[in-house]
Image 1 (cartoon, rainbow over the protein chains, first blue to last red):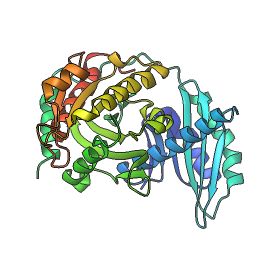
Image 2: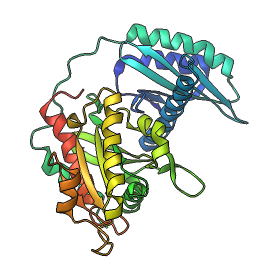
Image 3: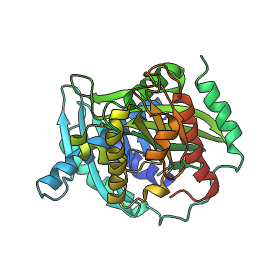
Length: 156
Length: 199
């Protein structure tokens, strides 16, 4: 079963290439607010959201420390565990700033991830379309469905 | 910014519970976590101090269901209320699609409520966002306390709600008003997606 999922199609090929080359177990591509654009390796959507929230928090808090130190923004951060390592990095794209959270295992290394991450960023920037004018999404009468959904959510 | 996946027909929105320290922001999230079926919510992540005060944020993802053919997810965040955690409050506020301002109804907390509301305005402005452009709901929490200790909804509206925003009296510990608050902010946030192009 494929565990690759993308909100925006242009991210798929660069992500596929990156996870294959870097040997990443899990990868999230997201906005600084923690909204996921593409993911690899996760099975439950809700776990993805928690990981994205935490990854975005790491990046934003280290950026704030950099600001206090009057340093340019840190480009990447790595934590090495016994069985897994995490690599978190941000980069600028035509879609604005984007973040990546990469989890790798013992079959890979931070060096390998870092090496292919540069290609990943280059591929993403090349594939990224110019942002389109966005259109209304929901129907005017969405509130009836919203009320039904919320009622079922809070049903005891 | 709401994230819309047209191919998978999914919408993800970020809602931030804001307000002064100990007003009940985390309690709202805990109540929602306890009431929502496990298959429609994720793990609640709390970055808290040893005494369970929110240090960075609480985070709870929930699946609202299908609305206009879109599977709709909300990411609920709460910020640390204490004054000296403003740096982290700003970070959590980034990209919020809607804000629930949880006010403490106790009369002696009125100044803290006003200060926190001003802080919300200032932090949004720092991110180039006009507070008037953000869907905002006021929740007046702790309405279960003795009447002599608290301000009533009309009094709190006079003090805090000069824009005539939706306001909900609540007792988040027992759950009163929590659902109504979520419903009100959901409607405001999704209304934007039905009326105008999401930004």
